[in-house]
Length: 114
Image (cartoon, rainbow, N blue to C red; front, side, top):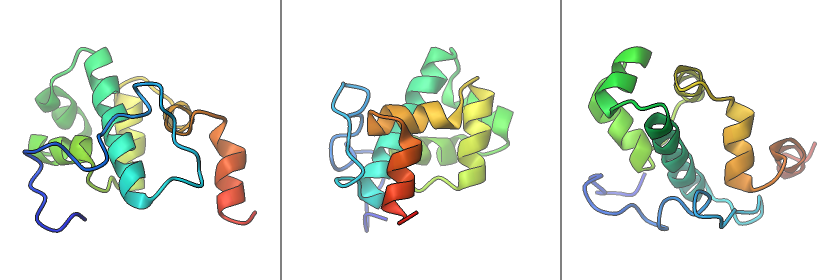
């Protein structure tokens, strides 16, 4: 997604803006920004649940390195996102609402022309 980004340095766009109270509007949201924000939310949920990356990765059936990439902002397949939410006791809509700083339903429908 970011060319040769290796996950060991700080991800682009300063991951975690939504967690720091700087929500992103649907108009400002790019795929890269969304992935970084979503990865930050997954990390926050994991830590809130008291799990290590290895613990959560085993629970959802992936390698720890895959989870580390997701948390760093790599694309997360939809089903994996849902599995990660369930494993941490969270609802996917709540995660999306935190990233967008609003009720995500109308914003997503608007962005898709619905």
